[in-house]
Image: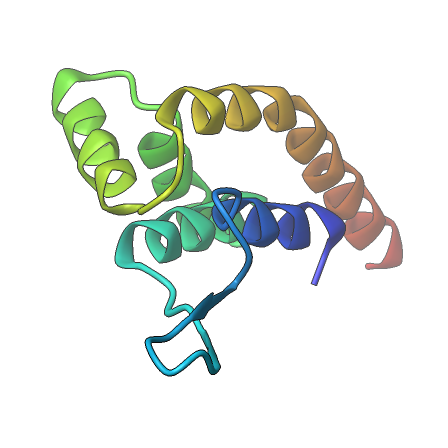
Length: 113
C-alpha cells in the first residue's frame, strides 16, 4: 500500500483513534464507514493503471457536472468524521502528484515492453 493511501486511511479517523471505548471499558475497533470506503476506493482507482477505472474515479473525485457533484457530496456525507472541505483540499493537492506518478508508471511500462 502506498504512503498516500495509508495517510488517507489514517486521516479518515482524524476525529479520534481507530479504537473507541465500549461501555465495559474494553477497546473495540471502529468499523469503517461506507462513505470513507467509497472515497478510498475511488482514490485507489484514480491512481490505478486501468484507464476505465481511472476515468470513472476522476469523474467521481473531481466532478464537473451538478449530477456528479451531487453523487460526490452524497458519498462524502456518508464518510463519518471527514470534513468535506479538508477532503476537497487534500484531493486537489494530491491530484498533480498522482497524475505524475501514473505518467511515470506508464512510461516505465512502455520502456519495459
